[in-house]
Image (tube, rainbow, N blue to C red; front, top):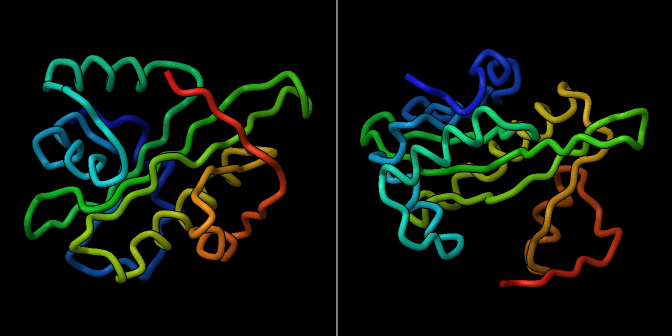
Length: 165
């Protein structure tokens, strides 16, 4: 089975608070059939992504730099992906040729919310980012989520601007 990154990197960072019916692991190619894109659709527009497009993008992400560390929570009773978050590493020349981490696409299935799964995803990615040696970890969120993310050490310290195409 093909994972987006080596699962052994993740193992030491999984919180002990994960319920028995759930497992946290790297994104796998077969998550296309486990509802991964439908889950992302609860966060933002996914568009038309068939299995071939998903697998091509998966391989491009798996083999590219920066490194994509996409983590999912799978409900082993239903074989469905019920949570996901991404840690993207961006290599730099600054900070002694260090790397910056960005947390992206944090989402928990609407039927599974209020079970602290978002917290588990964040704890996992923050710990993983530290172990990978990032000099900074950042994320973007709507103002309503600032209190949630501040629980994990994130601070609202700059303006962020976008262009959408």
